[in-house]
Length: 511
Image (cartoon, rainbow, N blue to C red; front, side, top):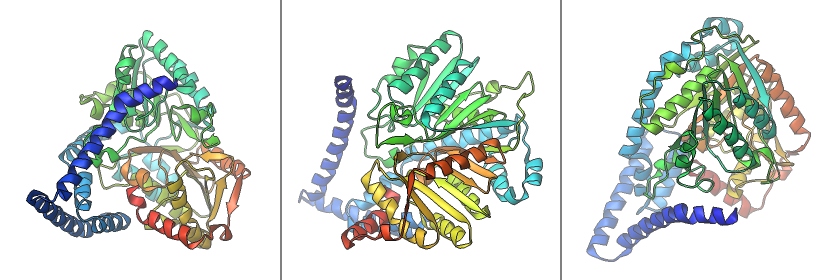
């Protein structure tokens, strides 16, 4: 296994990294070469940096991004402006954004095929009218009734349930994941997929190339096609200096026949089911939807598939309730949603803000990272100051030390405002859940950090008075029993650590 991993790494990945380093080396030599060409090029880069800073300050964007970029460019005037251009002024990125917009407009009218329940939902849930209205009328993600909700935690339970549902597939299986890695979890799923293709079931898989950078060989999509599995790689990583690679497909979606859908934090790798130990016990969560709302995730998947494969998909042929009505009846409402960095609408952030702003009694939050901008920080603090019981669980054992240190830098002001912070001492918590007032909850893929909120493709399911709402709450309270509460005293650090945290926090938007 180790020899195979090394072979894959050096054949594909080391070549890519080497080419990137050569490009960086060439730019450095060009700037520092001492020739007239070098001096002229340096002046040009300095001018570019000045223009970039002026543009950033005047541009409509998050204040934290403006500050981080401005400081970076002013600190490194020769390369800072060039880095910004690579991040934000690429024709390929604009073309990609155009494709995303096209698929969104194409899918928008089809979300209503199962029948939506906007009027009945807003009538029964008047206090949640702003959130329901925002997601349906403004972002195009409608609210559905007649959907069973099942909260699945930890990853072992999700795998067991997913395998059972995959076995029931009759027409198609769609999978979209950030990370896929060979091992107990993926191999058990793959065996079912291979068998289903022989039964005439259409199987499609999308995986993110950066997420699988060190877990899958470059030709893995071709390997799967030999087994009849259609495969697409999202935003393939190329050895060219471009920060377009920042926009990754962080979604985790599984759809079976348009009737059943899964989402949540769980990728297809063994640490997510604790088959291997990575940062201690891996605590994660997913949600399974059965019924009308599953169609929403079908459309979300199909849009990404069309973008990746450059095809013109007929979305409607996958609609499952053409010949019969959906037989599912269940209490409550479900509103699936997706987020894209290609527009100026931060859907995942707004879902979280709505929950915080509407809360009357409590909001309980699971998140692996806590690196937020002023708007989210202000909402958390204001809710706590207003008497709402805000509790947040983050990991005690970290996966990236600099991210964990930055997360801890937010503890002080949150705790002073009345927010209760807990760390999961049993290992690493990767769940991304909010639950509030015994009435609403969301389970999805969006972390409370800049990458998830503003740079990645994300998704989730927002629940109103559905069965799974109380399951999310009960799981949170049970998890608290194996957490330690962080106090103001715990947040006291020496001046060196405090300074490092402040620096990391300053550049958090670029991490």
